[in-house]
Amino acid sequence: MAKDEHWPGMCARCGRRQAYSEPFDAALCPYCDEWREDACGDPGCEFCARRPARPSLGREVYPKDTALRRAARLAARRPRTTHPLR
Ligand SMILES: [Zn+2]
Ligand SMILES: [Zn+2]
Image (cartoon, rainbow, N blue to C red):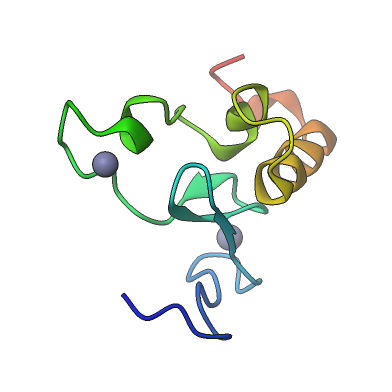
């Protein structure tokens, strides 16, 4: 996939700019706290095997990744009801 300056583009759900998590090699929306690329399904894939249900949870795996940190920061501000996993 060509990763130009417009990539990963805008979120189809909230209309805001999406982000890219390099360690997970996946696009995500930090506002919706959702991955925007499906896991590849390969059980041996090192990227997908470590990928948590939500980008905000990925911060614990890769604390330095700016996209994940942003997702976690935004998630912390939202009401708990949007986070059934916690
Ligand atoms: Zn969004
Ligand atoms: Zn994969």
